[in-house]
Amino acid sequence: PGCVNTTEVDIKKSSRMRNPHKTRKSVYGLQNDIRSHSPTHTPTPETKPPTEDELHQQIKYWQIHLLSYTEQYVEYDPFLVPPDPSNPWLSDDTTFWELEASKEPSQQRVKRWGFGMDEALKDPVGREQFLKFLESEFSSENLRFWLAVEDLKKRPIREVPSRVQEIWQEFLAPGAPSAINLDSKSYDKTTQSVKEPGRYTFEDAQEHIYKLMKSDSYPRFIRSSAYQELLQAKRKIVMEVSVIELKVET
Image 1 (cartoon, rainbow, N blue to C red):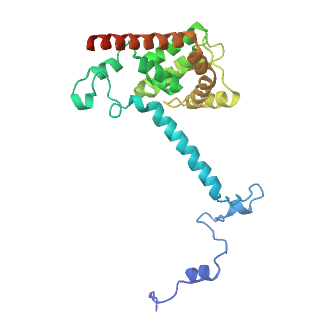
Image 2: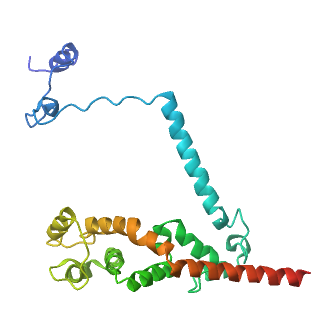
Image 3: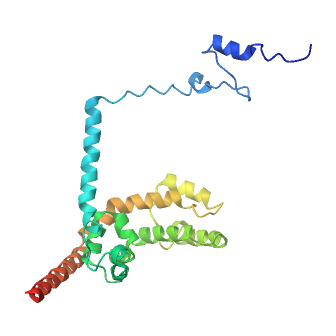
């Protein structure tokens, strides 16, 4: 008496096995499937599995996308297309990297800015040219805000609160000298986030501005005479060098 018999059947377990559909309660006394019984929530409809034709279409789409990406970037892979100067991973010659980091971008680098806005932003010279173009149109505040937020994420934590206030005053505060155009939802959320400053205080605002630049400012930059002239100038230099090399060989 008073001892637990391990051969006895667990009553709760036995009850659950006999009534598998019976609603169980959590430790808080709430039904686990309360969402399904709530008048404010409707059960999520079952997802219909894709048909064979739909799967083929999806595979075809990604196949075309992957091939297009590969063809676009193949000339930038030094293992597939031998670069000039030589591949630094094979020859231990760092001239290639030095040219890629220089202030005078190669024709390949300038061409790559046209692949997408991220390519222009991650190249220091591309970023600088993009900013110059926007300044010529008196619309550089969006890019300057985006860059300021990127810089904020890398700041030491002790500098974050003061930098958050500086960004707020310059771009978002009433009467800001470089006011950016935010939708009301992003602005309200950012206003609340500023009260507890952190590295990601402006994340929603930055995402909104990024989409605006990608759909408006960036396409105008790529179509601009400034970018097209730079691209043509670099292309002309490459052609002239090729002609000189051919003459030397002959």
